[in-house]
Length: 105
Image 1: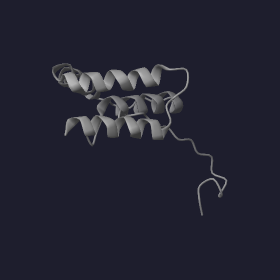
Image 2: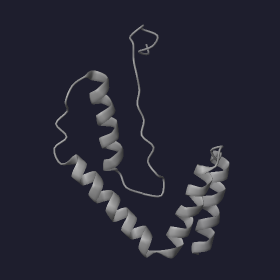
Image 3: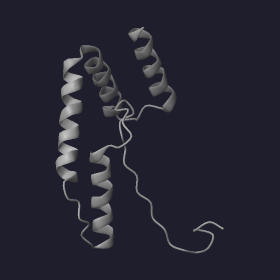
């Protein structure tokens, strides 16, 4: 029996993690989720160094992209798609990824 079918109130949160990151954990997303949970529950979660980890991870990713012109161009195109009034479809994103990967070979 599902939670909803049992009449138990539930809420879900999600964090968007850029697909191109390729890491198993993304500290900025974890931090955002925990902060939303803190506000919702009215509690304080001991986040310890997670804020520092999030900043450091983001800085490393920014530096890595800045060093690679192809990655920088790819990210710029993705951001341009995302900033349009409409969000790109999954097919459009997949097509862009395929085009990028073909250029890499």
